[in-house]
Length: 99
Image (cartoon, one colour):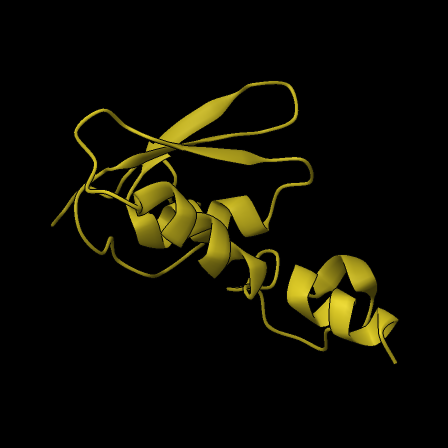
């Protein structure tokens, strides 16, 4: 696939995985359609983002993206130490709070 979905960040080197099946919206309702892989990576990088399945998406696409995003660090393609809460996944932040 030469073209990547609109949810793929220009600096994210990963290819699309599957067809475009979700729309990811940010806190002000700007959005991008994407494959599940890039949809999850985008959602993980947004504060207050939401995900919706497109009409022809397979059942469970939006929930798979939502669950995957929970364990992905924001802008996960950026190298370097990650110690600040804003640099950790939602799951990592929950684990830190429960200690």
